[in-house]
Image (cartoon, rainbow, N blue to C red; front, side):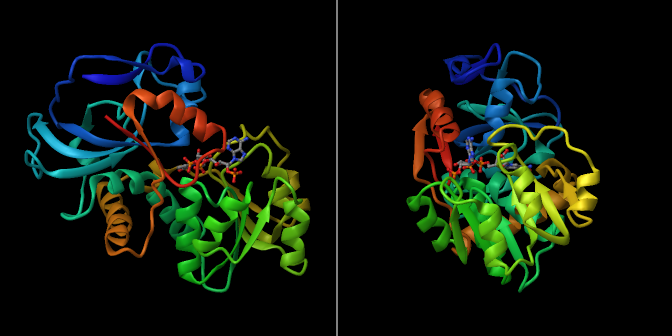
Length: 322
Ligand code: NDP
């Protein structure tokens, strides 16, 4: 089968479109024929070696497809079932091995590409607004990179709760998308200082929560936009890792809270995974959660997909189609 194999970590050039054997499912595992693989920023961290795994490996950790074969002892799935999964490496390929307890059923009429596009970023947005900082109607959130894959879903979910969303984006095109997703105010943070603008928009009070996935270039200023005892949710580092900082700053800036969450810990049990996946996939199926899928590439063009995502050229979701 064709797959994108990484033999050594590095730039996009280490993504090799090559032939590898079709894997065989072991006990408790399922072989899935991949219909679409999501491309996520975490795939870049793995490619670069920021997140470690043993070499060589097939990049990608989000997919949807049909069950091809079952390992020993697998129950609850049958050949041909429509399934989706995430946070399991190896989806940039024609076939992927997934532990059965990490697979989720896809609603019968939902396009598998849509399922692949929604699952990881949708469950991320879901845990951020419902579990990490359970947003309430009337509260104000600052959402960075609001026209990105995760950002558009996060903005929709936060605004559907009734929260006021102040969104940052880099271009006018992205501003229009964030506004359509429900953002109340947009800041072009490449032109305007988002710290002073957020303070102005909140009459100096500050926001209740910042959802910051940009990291290095935004973290310090994001802290300054929070109200006393507000929460900084640092959930990524698209611009680079945040350098170590002195915890005393949390006191001087207003007895702030900081958390660095990751999806894995919000879908630890099978019940958690199924509940969160169902909340996302059923909302997509019902049309109440819109997924923007403007960037679809053949599997062989994984390098271009990574270049576009890291180059801030994309909006919404990127998919690789084997
Ligand atoms: P996006 O589609 O959001 O793409 C990243 C966006 O970040 C860009 O479009 C860009 O938007 C913004 N950005 C700002 N500065 C930079 C920079 N220097 N380089 C590149 N991009 C920059 O990607 P994803 O939705 O896949 O991921 C978004 C973030 O969420 C990532 O940090 C990722 O690690 C994190 N994440 C975390 C999860 C978790 O559980 N912790 C799970 C899923 C994602 P603009 O041009 O508008 O600035």
